[in-house]
Length: 436
Image (cartoon, rainbow, N blue to C red; front, side):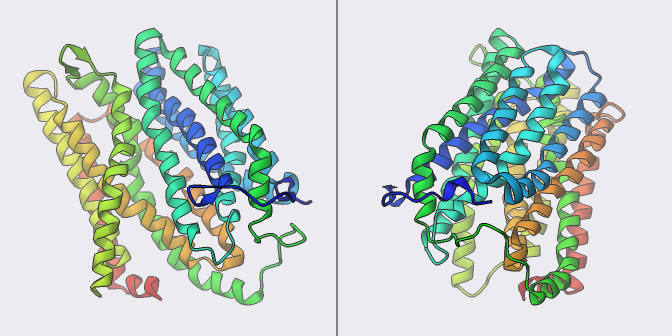
């Protein structure tokens, strides 16, 4: 059926040199990520402190929720493409997510809330993100910059959310933090609905839509290309999943450590533990331009860094992040509290690790995807986080079975083992295969 976003209209407005629709999508996504990361920053602490869950239970539920939220986009994207259209999928997804956050303002609404948010995310994330490219003609040079702007919207919401929701949770109670997440999602939905005519005008004039919205059958040559590349993609995906076992502890066991073992007093003010979750997006803002500048200089000089070499360096940074936490565990053992410098160092190194692994892997998947299978391949990339999150949640249950030092040391060993596997894969020709 035709997507309602393809309606014709007057010549589209532009803002800052881009279609007005980009600002609408940017604002909607910023609100959505505020709600999602605000709730996520509180979740494990809420289950342990408020609901009296054991740490292994809370860690497993956290991993199950994050994993489910990254599996549902496969189903939501399919339904949007084949049945209801992207605009209706965004509205449905945002509504479900708002209801889910609202449900979590009651203790009894935990499971219903997490289910609704995970389902809503499936409809919301794929449809909203895919409309970025739909705003531009295929040869429009602004498209790449548009994705950078969109990514900033994601991290803007992720940065602000733990500060606001964490402060409300500490000052007034957990449910006020979840209520703030619900309000943000409602605001995102209002923005999307109120400015839908402007978004539709931008989409209608992009020149990317054919007369029919029915998907084209993939050419046989594309299917052959996909079959040839699947082993390469599977190898990269397996390595990324291993990396994520340590990375996904940021909102899980690391959040518990900061809450219970870190001296968070600063000038007489006790910093809320969820505020530390804002360090990751803040550092992404700061470090990404520097790293991309350095990588571009290497490329211009004819010395590009191979894909696997970047990802290996990311694993090394992950090992350094957990080495910093071992320093914190040592100080905690001596003085009964660890200084804030240790989690600050952890977030610095882990953000460097993230930038070297996750966006590099996503870009690789996009580059290797035959055009008519692109959505399917990108969907596999995101759904793989389901596997990684479930595994990371189960991995986090070791937190109470091991001493903090031992747990952090296991993460160092995991990072180094993943780096060794990447090195071995490169020696076997994976780097050359990925470069073709």
